[in-house]
Length: 191
Figure 1 (cartoon, one colour):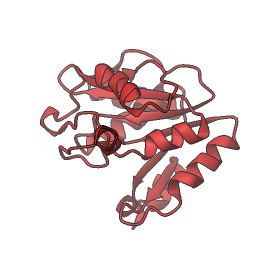
Figure 2 (figure 1 turned 60 degrees about the vertical axis):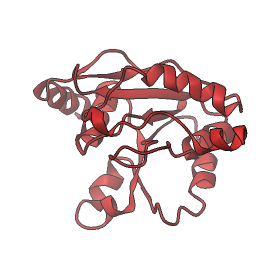
Figure 3 (figure 1 turned 180 degrees about the vertical axis):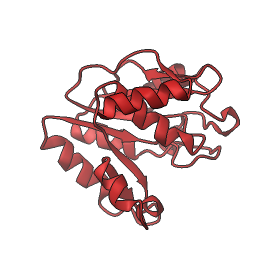
């Protein structure tokens, strides 16, 4: 049912999934560029159309109110951005204890242009030994898809170079809001 609804929604939105995700049983999916409110709906439809039932992170405010139970049922995990607590450790433990998980993380953390990506995705993948699969939406071409699997090496700059290469021509729904793939930790490593 989800797959049918997702394909219909993508067709009505004139979006096309141009490639499928790898057949990894446990993976972390980067959701980028995150530039509009439509990203959430389009990425969820793209995942369902690709036979994924993802768990995804969303800001706590999304889960307050009437839509909270629906978002949780759709795989949502509430994130208090001001007090993340043990979120990374909890997600690492979940990834290590399951045989099937597609965890979607909007690495930019906001729909506005920023200076850095949030680094939690990298720490989760490294600590849980999870492959990272970049996924994208490109508004100007009305396409979305998945990139090559990256096994985090611990060399943050080298791994981020791979993401910068992949996302170089991916613009998002609102290209002016795209944040270039970069982690604060890269600047710390240089200093």
